[in-house]
Image (cartoon, rainbow over all chains, first blue to last red; front, side, top):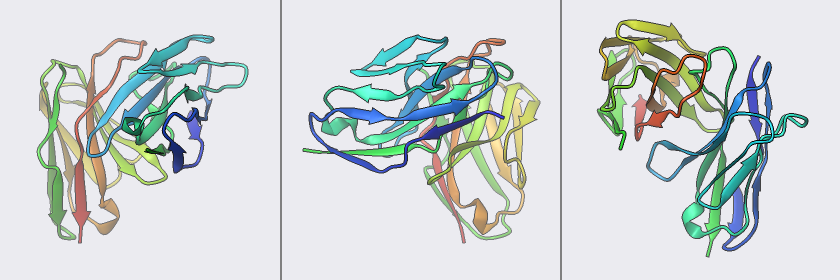
Length: 113
Length: 115
């Protein structure tokens, strides 16, 4: 079946540190891949996406590259800010049933000034 | 901007009560979703609706039902609430795009406590 695995949290970093949140997936064929972010007290919002192999999604200084050889979609940011503190979810949209999303368990990120 | 609203941010109910969670979207989206969010488990799909009066079970439909009488409104019903249904409930909507995925837009969530 389809599944997404994210690195265990919580993750705590200092401001301006480099961020990586690992995400790997299991799916049939080539799904579309997403990162969603949930700020405190809010619903989820799309951060970035990639729809085919080797695509790079980017937004707000965050990047992730769709790697089919390693079935991964790791989230990176070069210099984090306190305002990046949130829960990050990796998700996939399968080839069949593309309207639905399969989410990872979420990674809580805290950035200290 | 797309707006998805949920009827309550916080709700406390007793075991055995019938509970209604309401969700409204204002962008004429065909698809609507109900998820529950639990620590360490991420989001799990309860039910999905792709049109008025059309619904499809998600991964964890047991103990829940849904109603979609109008395109903009999608209700989640707990027929007889139990303590293991204490959770955060998130509603989302998206355009219908056949075999292509579209972004899902989420409401702020309803934190339900069943005592």
